[in-house]
Length: 260
Image 1 (tube, one colour):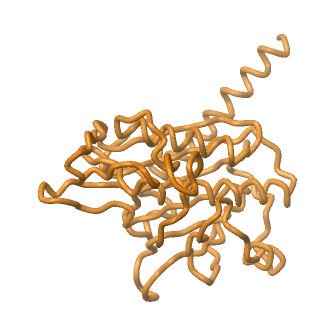
Image 2 (image 1 turned 180 degrees about the horizontal axis):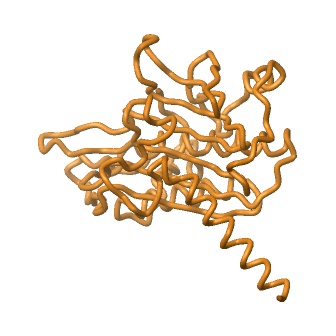
Image 3 (image 1 turned 120 degrees about the horizontal axis):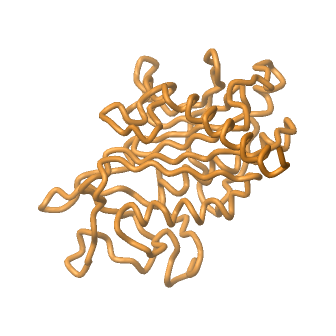
């Protein structure tokens, strides 16, 4: 067997392992009404976007959930883009397989947003309420910049986790957008028309749900977030980059002027 053959065999085995891990999360190509609702998402509000990053062996446990890990994960970190950090909540808690920080409005309520560090060293993040009905035609709209921000923060934390624990790729990055069929994008950067503007020639997503995967050797948030933003735009029928301003002080870059 050549080195190339062995490498391809290992890649097939790794991809099968990733899919086996994602199956109970309902993040496989068998898209149905339970799409993206397994695992941690089952105790959260139905997500608009879910991001899951898996190391080469998602069934391993290189990270201990002890005070050292909790102290590290609770450190205040700047946003990877020049704007407000995503408000995940101010308390981390453990589950059997993850340390989680979640935005909740009462103790018995489902999580509105959460970010999690898994024992295997991967990061997961999800958020609800990033879409809404807008306009006289009750158009369903997803906020592009909010979704990009969720993915960007998750990737940046993944980069730090990989460095802190010495976890080496390849990695699988999964981005799921739920219940996007018939919906449009909005929440754009400066200089783009929102879908309820009468001058807008907006398009809508054709798929009920969208599932995207990337396999990368290293976590490079700056490069990956560009691909993720492009893929989200493609899902909704566009090839533009409307998370980036085309005029004003942020022209040509991500426009962080939005709130949570």
